[in-house]
Length: 195
Image (tube, rainbow, N blue to C red; front, side):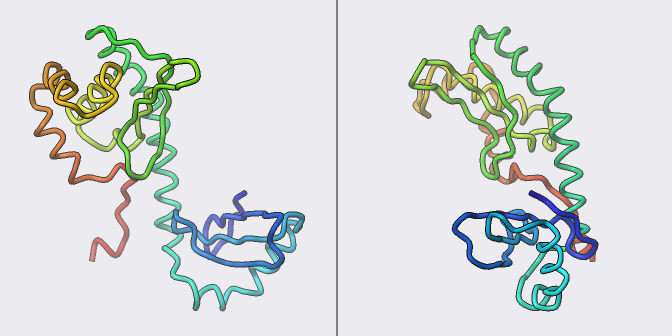
């Protein structure tokens, strides 16, 4: 659950049956996170937040809420762009090179540009592509798509896998190296970076 706060921006609220007290921490997203007992009413959470502001400011290293809001807005935009573009680009290459996959999904993994999963229960395949691809040039997007499609035939990084990738993307080594210098997360420019 998220609550909006004028000072801290979006605050992550985690209700936990095992919690006996209220605890503040920094979520992986950089937001303020409050862990509370499961049945704590929202008005008490907000009251506790208001009475603990000074303690939160001094004890936790929080990211600037403006930067976080900017990141959240950009993430929503990238998600929308990815959902409208990536499935069609994936389908284009799948048809062009004779690949078949069962499912496609858009992800926001922090470390992977894409993945190809074969489900052991029924043998179906899912290709996931990261919204971060919308921040890189098209040749790098295409490399990731072709990389994941090649996994449909080779669920490893063997010589045969790389030969198949090279068949469809002769410059794959250049594209792979360029991607290795980037991060699939959502990029934002903070005011500190501009100084």
